[in-house]
Length: 403
Image (spheres, rainbow, N blue to C red):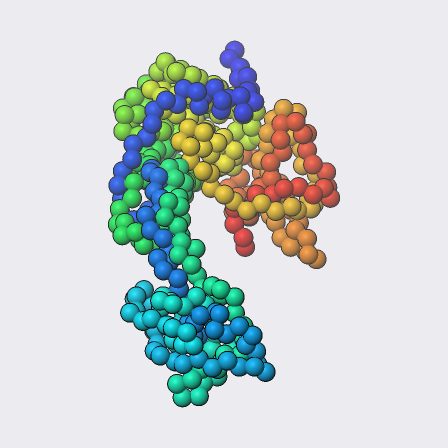
């Protein structure tokens, strides 16, 4: 009788990543559609921002040496010779000794000035401005390159593109950007799906997770419990996708053909069974330098795989930063355990009480409990070398949503 031996997660990932030699290609997409996609290129600033000294408030541009010793008891008069009200326009004004110019926030300082006094620290009589405060050089002034310096990195390959990246690229006149052209096929296995007896809803969870991660193409299909058909789908699809994830059929039941199908395709590396709860019957393999992974068709086990295994494989393989989720310290409301040597994902509901975060484990079923995912807003991980956490213990919780 066949048995499954369970590898430690880190060791299994190490072995698989060594064989992931395929490098996904780049593709150019519209900048405005690049949010949360993974950058395929490095891009550095080609400009200094601001290009000239600019005012950080409404006031008067002046020479700081002209108002040395100014105070409310000793206002110093300056002659007003003009005004600057349009940002990003370089005015042809020269300010001399004892003179000043009205200036609005964001406008470039005129020649000869090196500070801006705010309106509240002045009063005006006709064309004379009385300054009631001493200023340091460059006070209330943003210097060239202070916001963005020429050569500053804006994007690096592997960075997930955020709104501020898009803003900086737009400043440079960029309309298209190179991103990793990541494509995944999610395959659901089971005769019950082909016969319409059940809806393969776990496929949606898996596919949407990859879309959130930054994949440009995430498609799903279903196939019956047929070893040869599973092999055909993998062989046919692998040239068109960077990764294949198969859901269901990873165990050793009568209709669990996935392990045998993958083995018969002569993978570069093959691991069946990892020390993960839920998700111990996971299959990790590489074929033609690409990951071909078998995970449970049950939603919680699939989610545990995505968060604790596949995300790390993608990070190591692609050099892509993971999705950073907030973590909080929370007080556990009941004891949670796992077997020694097994890493466990525990669904929890986190809430605030009397200034502290509380983590309530959701013991609403096993690896197939979709309800526990719907009720949870985070999870905690029990490491392999820890058998559990006690009630009242402070634990680290990963938050995936607030409600």
